[in-house]
Length: 225
Image 1: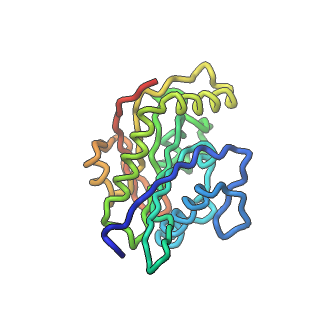
Image 2: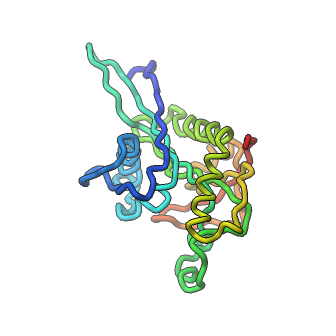
């Protein structure tokens, strides 16, 4: 692998609920960039980390933005390009935290699907880099790309949240996003997010997702509405 490997990124806007999304080994109508994102996510989360295939594509995928990072390398007289890393940005609102930390009791406590009470935040999630491309700062690069985009696209984020509020009959509860960012970080990458300015919210505790310990971390970025 050449050290001069050029990197390119592509953005996948929210596909919308009308688009049927599926894993790449199934008959799919996925948009091409989304399909590349799922190829990376499947390899890392399903094949490597043994997460459930049934839970890899969730309800957030239809309403989220994703960025895929591609590696282009020249071999002889040909050039190959392949997806090697991905990140997803979920607009507000987010589910109540108790659904993650106490799923058994939350299912019987009549919690709403989304938290419309607290300050809205975007969530950075599904950050993945395939094994042979790790150690190059690609995860960090994608976080910076996603947050840079968010800082100048607050209106798009607000519009996505407002549309969901209208669909959920929660328009009266809609609040504009003020730059708060949440990440559910696997504990082994907590230090990377700390170096990017995220602070661990110890009140959220440590919880298990698919057998992997996670912590909640927050950061506030400057935005322009």
